[in-house]
Length: 219
Image 1 (cartoon, helix red, strand yellow):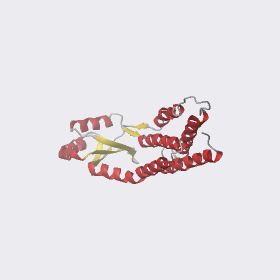
Image 2 (image 1 turned 30 degrees about the vertical axis):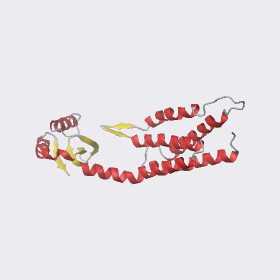
Image 3 (image 1 turned 60 degrees about the vertical axis):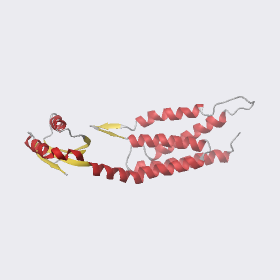
Image 4 (image 1 turned 90 degrees about the horizontal axis):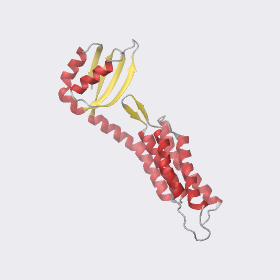
C-alpha cells in the first residue's frame, strides 16, 4: 500500500492542527513545553508512524512489523517529558505538561496511521481536560484544604523550624509558595489539609511564639 502526496500532506496538516490546539493551552499558562513544542511532537510522531507503516511495506510478500519504529516514540517521548518536570522547593511542577506531550505523541501516531476519528476525539478530550477540568481540580483542592500564611525572618533555619512544628501537629503540606516583603521578611503561604483544623489553635499559638515569626494567619 502506498500513500499519495495528498494523503501524506493531509495527515501532517491534521497532526499540526491537533498538536497546536493542545499546545495553545499550555502556552497560555507559560508552561516549559508550549505551542511549538506540542506541534513538533505531534507532526514528528505522525512522520515516524508513516515511515514505520509505509516506508518498508513489503513488495515480495515478506512479513514486516509496522509498529517497530513507531514504538520508539512511546518510550522516547519520556525523555522530553521529563525535561518539563521541575522541582521547586517541596513542589513538583510540569507533570501535566509531560502527560500532554506523551498524549500528543499518541495523537500523532494515530494520525500517521490514518486513524483520524480517535485522534481528533482524543485531542478534544485533552483540551477539555486541560481547560474545563482545571477549574474542577482547583475547586476540589480549595474545598479540601486551608491556607496558612506566615511572615518570618528570612534565615536558613527558619523554614526547618516551621516544618518541624507542623510535623509535630501531624499537618500535611500540599503546596508552598515563597515571597518577600519590602523589609526583607519571608512571606510563606502553605496549603494544608482541612482536617488539620482540630489542632489549629495550638499550632497558631506556637507559631506566634516562635522566634522570628511576626505574623501567622490561617484561612
